[in-house]
Image 1 (tube, one colour):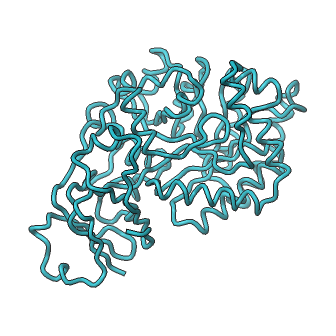
Image 2 (tube, one colour; image 1 turned 30 degrees about the horizontal axis):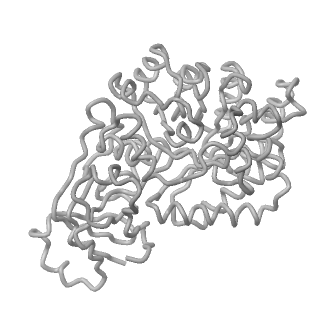
Image 3 (tube, helix red, strand yellow; image 1 turned 90 degrees about the horizontal axis):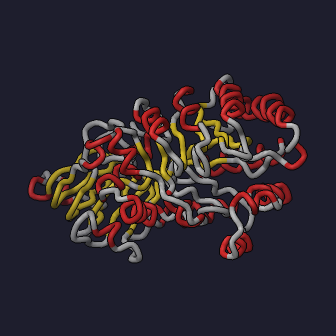
Length: 414
């Protein structure tokens, strides 16, 4: 099937190559005005200016009129936890009353509460809830998403989550990457037996995950009161031994050392980074490990935002993601993520869009397939209502801008 998208007022992120963007490169967003894009069998096969549209294309049967709106690559959300049971709004009220994230966790809430509910839920229930969340975020512009386990914390629970993610991969129009996060926290029965839980991960979870090809990555929550840098490295190396590449929850609540562990291991990304000193920033800047920033989590937890400007100016590669989860970021709205990056972290609109598209794709190792308007890449595209400029997207944060989506050969109502 061949589709022509015409009358595009602004075509953003037009590139012939797909580099990791850092420093000043992050503020450069190539744009073409008054454009068209040709999609063949779900792949971008050409683009250009309307005044140079080849005569044969103008008479094509299948055409989408962008009606003066903008077109840009779909958001690449490289950090989520969307397979979960129910919600945790009671903890939301506890936070309003003054309890901290750590205090809620110590009372058996937080991750442990989600783990309890997940282990009681059926696989079908988890799939149906996650499917609804995927449908929701795709309508808001997300075309690729990473999904983590980590709410099982038992052999059965973690495998159940990963099997749900595998089923989502097989059935969804979105590009999906799966991450094994069995090391999200220590189950209550292993609070005083860390070695025992790590052994469970190594000997009972990882072999099945590898045999069934249930995950692309392994992740660890490296944080005070959770997994130490030494434990993080041990678990990541066990995953690497069966073909899983590391991603690390790092420096969310404290200077955890997770960033340095990630750089040492050549991790695809280190995520959160609310607490960074000069040593951690320089370590990240001197590597190709991507620093994934999650501003809606900082917003929801009322903690300091990630030091985006310092990271960019130091030359680190950064991406933006939603951290969609029931406890600290119950939203997968990447439009809001981009707005918060600009408003609260002083990222330029061009920087935020680059971080949420091309660098986000690289954070899922999809940079050669998604994240830019490039011939040969999958046509995962956002079509907006008419906007005066790129800056209008993060500026008008409360106004829905997405008119429709094209995800390969699938498209929403336009």
